[in-house]
Length: 266
Image (cartoon, rainbow, N blue to C red; front, side, top):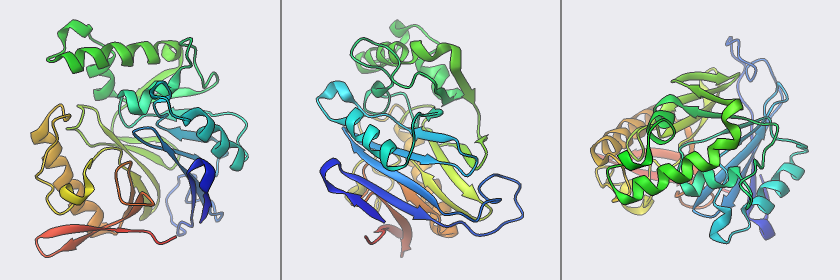
């Protein structure tokens, strides 16, 4: 594991087991280097698949005064990436999507295909902002549509399942209706990049029933959290998320009737 302290970038090297699966990750014996970038309000994730496609998951919140674009560019340079082929969003919220455009509202990733879950697109992109149930939702509909507009000709909407070789979308609805986990996988090995399944890890990991005022559907968020914790604990599936204890990835394990997070050691 490498750590770029000045720009808060971590590189995790994963070696997937050999599998009979036909996906691109299973066909490769090379380790997969995943770069986690500490951005305003969250975490951006950057890696190159064995099929040599470069992916960025979430983009940060540059208008919030952070150095998100600089950090993502530094991670791309460290990974030997000259351009981003795909941008995948865990959700269309300002702190995860506003980095799609620059200050002039032009696309930052000019050659990239933008991939979002169909439920997320329906809620934020395919409706009038005035239909939002609250001022916050109405405001975020407008922001989401503005930053996705330059990508309309290369926007792909997906359901649950494999979106790219070795990368699958899984619905984690609740925080937003189309909140999406991205599973990087090979056979039974994988990493679930789960976005905002938890916001306050010290509270919500041992008490997954605790909701947050920013959840669009708190009841669905609770159910998603419990279901996801059960799955990743049973499967020993590594998870990565913006609000987990440093370094931001590790394992959820059962602790009696509750859970705890075990961060990976640096």
